[in-house]
Length: 258
Image 1 (cartoon, rainbow, N blue to C red):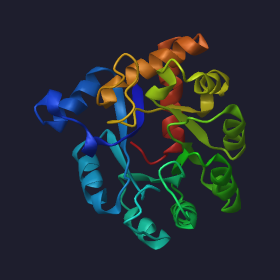
Image 2: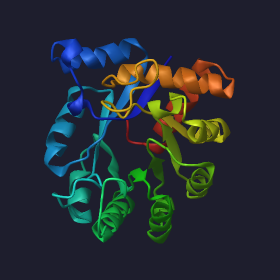
Image 3: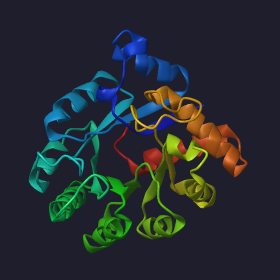
Image 4: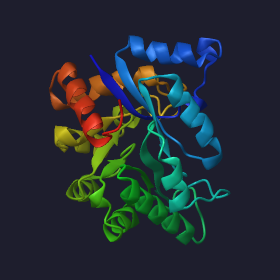
């Protein structure tokens, strides 16, 4: 089985079980069938380390972007375009909107999101989109900025089928994290059942959101096997088929990933 963890944060992993050694954590994932990992950037100041980690491994790619909750940092389309020139950088993000953790005026989030979309269009690299309690504005901005030209993924999808359908209309993929395995995640499970298989990705978002049976523990790329098995059972298909399809989807979207 060849699986792709399409969204994780290797530089944030809890390495206590591995004596502080990232290589052991990565090799643990490899031993479980994880053949490729996308190391996602959330902070401009941390981007050099995100990129350096990706350069350590031929099967790890990187992104560049500034998370919507990082209010103390700034970036621009020009900076993102410049940093995305490295061959290891296969995506712009994660970017998007998060109204759950923000209060007051959030126009700065919307403007930042627009900058990322423009950078994606300029570089031809897809978007990694974070959306939390902001589904209407997320879709609206993607439409206004013509993000369908570059496509991308709504990562860690936690919304309903209505939003899923609108994302599909824009040519976007949906990625499912360990949340889909939670007992009360019925709306997400419905989307995971209905979504065309050629638009699905899998992720851990580690070190967050560990799937059942590891819920409540620090997450890691090796745990993606549980999410894959759960969705395969949900859809009534073989785990090998799900792995093959979602892997093909990843490399079709992130064309520069090796």
